[in-house]
Image (cartoon, rainbow, N blue to C red; front, side, top):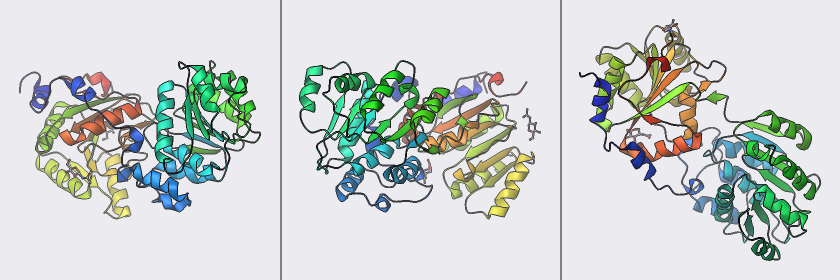
Length: 421
Ligand SMILES: *[C@@H]1O[C@H](CO)[C@@H](O)[C@H](O)[C@H]1NC(C)=O
Ligand SMILES: *[C@@H]1O[C@H](CO)[C@@H](O)[C@H](O)[C@H]1NC(C)=O
């Protein structure tokens, strides 16, 4: 093989050499209206019907393509409906928006023509997107949703507020302006939702938020969603939230220290590509993920045939058997472990320096659990994703949702990125 062996091998399988372009050219529908993949919802197995929502709301939910609640929705919806404050740590793209909009829509009293829910977001784009989700899910309810952000004329907003508004989606500065003028009456606002709260509570916004809270009805419910919990969020919580129910779906997993690449391949080239990776990379131990039990077994067989030592585990094996295999792998009895997603929580084996998605996952949460490491260890690693034509949307979406970069695999991978000195 030539000097650039690995890249050459993989390059042969690239459809386009201009990866940035093909990724950018993918036009995606709005995130929250797309059907959820089943692995987003695999945690408790709840159904939207379980929450006794209004029929018109359920219709909107199903029409928007939602099938089952995602983990953040399963955690949030019943608690929010019960009236408790919530402090939730969840990334974008996990169904977070609907996790607060569904209870807001359920609780709104349409016979009252007052603002009952205020949804605060840090940017205009997010305000527009959030209000759109609200309108979609509530479209059979006759709910009045208004969005107000800076950069539009105040006069239009004032006129609009002369009519009924049940749910107001806003950036903080503008709504404070309207509330201060007595145009937006928040005295019946019983639910205050803050999305991207870490940004909303930055010093620039915090005084505005505090004034807005004072305009809301005393004892209002506060739902706070944030990807990170800096100190500023904690002190706000202590001051304003009443025994909040805390949700953390991030498991402290982080992609810090993990260099992520993808290789664009065809399905039938995957094993060949894996073989190339094995021969070119300096793997101490690796975990290789497949999307089904049968593919796990098949791939483990292929890897063994290629002459590499390899164990496998999957969901259909007895727990005791799985534990033994995992224990042996941890003790270094074999170099490679092929598995399905069953053990993706809490893998933290120091000796594993390469994780390979033989089959690319369909959602960000699964990706994070496969590739992410517990922040406490902070060791370096490499993640390599084999991407087929069918995976291209998911790659783009997961990258966006996790705010991370998955780069095309380079000709030479710098050892300092994943090999301990
Ligand atoms: C698993 O991946 C293979 C190959 O990409 C694909 O054909 C199959 O439909 C996938 N199965 C599931 C359950 O996603
Ligand atoms: C490599 O793996 C072995 C076990 O398989 C482990 O004992 C060793 O510490 C690992 N090396 C590094 C640098 O992690």
